[in-house]
Amino acid sequence: MKKPIVGITLDSEEPGSYSRFPWYAIRNNYLHSIESFGGIPFPLFHTKENIDNLYDILDGLIITGGNFDISPKTYGEKSKESRLEKSDRTNFEISICKKFLNSSKPILGICGGAQLLNVVCGGTLIQDIKKFNIKNLEHEQINPRNETSHTVEIKNNSLMKKIIKKELINVNSAHHQAINKVGENLIVSGYASDKIIESIEHIKHRWCIGVQWHPEFLITNEDKNLINNFIAESIPK
Image (tube, rainbow, N blue to C red; front, side):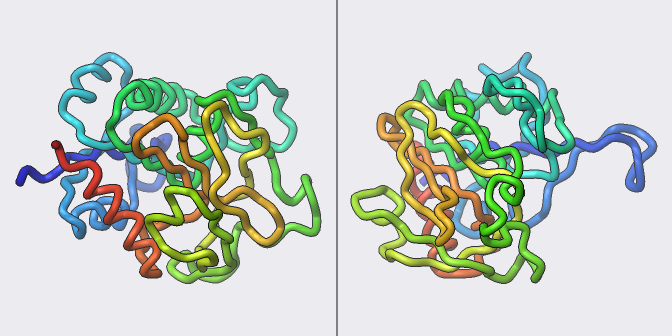
């Protein structure tokens, strides 16, 4: 059986501590979590020139997170609380996400990747959770990222519930923005206790899920089940 080749988006950084020239970056657990369940990670640099060729090669797509925000202009709002923006990365991720949405190939958005999926589908974002509601949970957790920090309620009759088979799960958390208005053809499949949206899925795509937490750390069995199912569904039929 052919192993699925999974495209995974890279972060980009300006010259600094690693190099005096611009460079790409990704945490190794993004890549090794794919490999551990039988996939082959294929890191994606930010160019729209070869998206059609990349699409032909790839069997699935993971849109990763990062320490930056999508420009509010992308979803029709003015910047209020957004932080660093990376337009080249965002523009590339929008383009390749649209390409995969017009196919049956699986898509997994992680943290900022879930937010991007929502924006691509016409949704909007909360630009800063703390300014939105001071009673919210601490979504930029203080404890290490390889530990959980809060719970998420998974909705019945969702693909997420079918995959992880639990109504309440523990997750890690590393985001200051969140989904506000949900995009077209997306439904909410998971909420935190403060009602921040934690999981979305596309109702017209075969397998398209976005989560605000980082399952690539494989902290819980639910994280493992999600990555495993994504890889299994990416195997070429």
